[in-house]
Image (cartoon, rainbow, N blue to C red; front, side, top):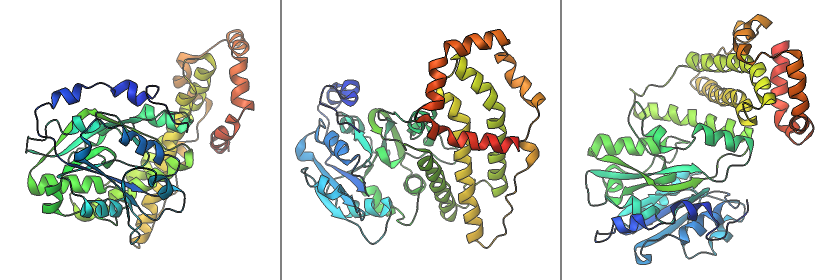
Amino acid sequence: MQPNTPGNDPIDKKCGNNIAAKRSEGKYKPYCSIIIPIYNAASTLELCLESLSRLNYPEDKIEILAVDNGSTDRSVDIARRFNITILSETTVQSPYAARNAGIRTAKGNLIAFTDSDCMVTPEWLNYLTADWENETYGCFAGEIEAYQPQSLVELFSERRGFMRQSDTLKNPYMPYPKTANAAYRKNVFDRIGLFVPEMPSGGDADIAWRMQKKLRLKVKYVPEALIYHKHRTDIQGLYNQFIKYEYGKFHLTKYYPDYPFPTIHERKEELENSILQYSIQLRKNTLSLINGSIDFVGFAAPFLEMIMCAGTLKARVEIEKSLNKSVDITLEDANYLHTEDDFKPAMKSNTMSVEEMAAVIAQKDRLISVIINSRSWKITAPFRKIAELLKS
């Protein structure tokens, strides 16, 4: 990842104005403790800390606490280059444990969280604190967008809106913000306790739900308080991400028995349906890719959706086994093995004559060459494997 120079950075271009500062003129500005959990974050940490150094907020009302969680790379050395406080949490390997260590040390009456793979915008804190004096709000949540997506998985994640607060703030059980961009009043933690350190994921939901249930305080969504997040860059990372998400949802059921956690059979059906959609869309999307009506991200989307469902089901199988339950995950062949007739409805709008197809192929020769012969060969290997399974 190449660093950006000030003024050339999309963060500066998009949010370099002073609107938030003007909104908050004459208002009390709380002392903010910014907490960043760190674990082997050398590839993004410098960008994160550089963005924090450009915050347009009174310097005497900010402290930055970077909590190392047992890094084995250059993360701590990078953090030492900046005027911040470096803490350590080595007892429990978890970002929630690291955040707890920061909260215990924090001096601020507002605790703001971001992650080591995030870049904040200059007016971030001004926007988050604009309604500080309204004490019905216990938490302030800003928006999260993708930071300079380049790889296939990053572009897909951006298109799917991964990490957007608008998703979890509409959670049907109860709204919650992602801690990559959320700030809580310090007295919320004093009254309800800290994060559950053992949770692999979902701790952001738990803390927000505890606040709402026990204190009757609300979450204030502030979309202008923008940060950028560096998404997972490869398929393995996407797969692992959804394994972790499912484990987090399982942990939530321990504390919220009425939380609607899908059964393993529902997860199995989700994967079967994603395989069905992939098999139907494969031919249709191939034609669409050739004729230029979709890009390579659109072509890959059904496969990546399937990867997400596979990660979710893998975690669920492991969970069931840990509970000493028998597991049968045989997939129904009828759901994803199709005849030529099954594809006709999906291909109808993309049907081309032999002459038309030949003309398109001739026009798109360079595109096809790139897809088949370039480094995309590695990216498309999983597609070919799935296609071979569907033919067998």
